[in-house]
Image 1 (cartoon, rainbow, N blue to C red):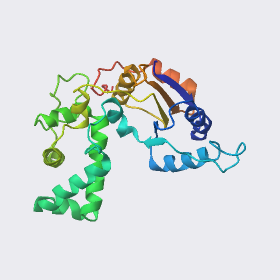
Image 2 (image 1 turned 60 degrees about the vertical axis):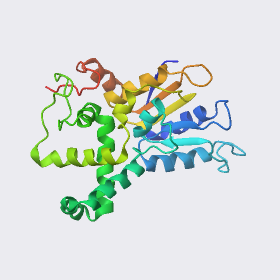
Image 3 (image 1 turned 180 degrees about the vertical axis):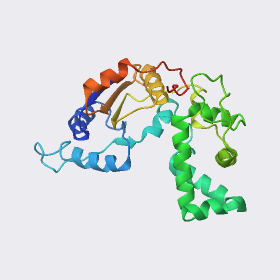
Length: 266
C-alpha cells in the first residue's frame, strides 16, 4: 500500500482522523502505532481519543485508549528495522543515561555539565541533540561512525566528504564517539542500512508540520515492507499546514534533492 499524505489546517483536525484510524478492525493484542511530534501532543490526543473510542455515547467522555503505541519521529528507524533486543539502546531515554555515564567519567566534560545546570540536564540536552542528528543528519552520523568529524553533507558532497566541524564544535563528535563505543551497537542511520524486518500492519504519523528528507525516505521504505499478514504496511502521514495553496506553490519550486543529503540553498 502506498504512503498516503493528507493535510489539515489545524492540529485539532487530527483527532477524528486518528480515531478513525484506531477504529479499524485488527488483532486486539497487536499494538497500533501512532507517531506524534511531542509528548504534549500525545497527552492531549490521548485525552481527546478517550472521549470517542469505546465511549458509551458520542463525546461521552467515558472511553479508553488502549493497545496504542505512541512514539515520536525518532522511532521511525525502529519501525523500519526493529531491534532484536527488548530495549533500543539508542532510544532517547537510554541514550540519556549513556551520555550521563560518559560526561561523569571524565573531567573534560565538567565545564559542559556546569553550563547546562548539572550532569543530568547536560545529558538530556545532548541526548536530544544526538537523537535529532540521527534523523535529520544521517549522512553526518555515518561519517562519525567512520571516524570522520564532518558537518552534515550537502547535495554536492561525495559520501563522507562534508566539511570538517569547527574546532568549537568538535566536542560533539568526540563525545558521540565515546557514547557509541559504550553502547556497542550501530547507530540508527547505520542500522537502517543493515536490512529490514517485518513492518507493523499500519502506522499513523500525525500532527507534524514538516518532515525531513530522511524521514520521507524512512516512510517510503516502511510503506514497501511486508507486515506479518503478508500485506504491505499501511502508512498514513497527516501533516498540519495552514495554507494548502501555499504548500502547492512551495512544492512546485522545491530544489532537487539527493537521498541522504541536505538540499543546497541559494
